[in-house]
Image (cartoon, rainbow, N blue to C red):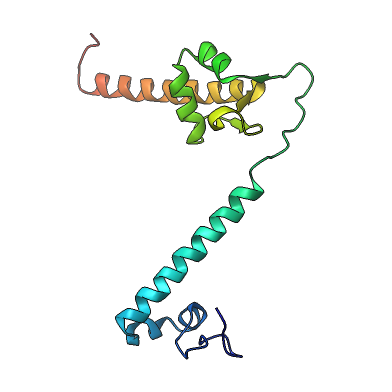
Length: 148
């Protein structure tokens, strides 16, 4: 999109995203068609930025593990934790376990978890479980209830 020298109007004399960013009150004065056009431009810009971010993070180089440490496959993580393989993948996709994406892999499932990271995560999970148990015990005691 071509803009004039100040960057606040396009070649047709319409306000640009830069104009709205510089003066937020301007949005209240613009016709609906202009607002819709600007929103469409923002969505395209957002998609372009997301694509650029994805491309930069596509093939990160994983650091070499420390002595005695190694990368576990998702199947090994599932076996170690007692969780189903599909649940382990879901946790990885949502960033709930310390999984690293190595390469592209089949269907984008080339996750690996460093053993030391998994141990730290397990320790954190144990701390949360212990805190929840203590909290439940105090509620039971406070209310004179008994555990089943």
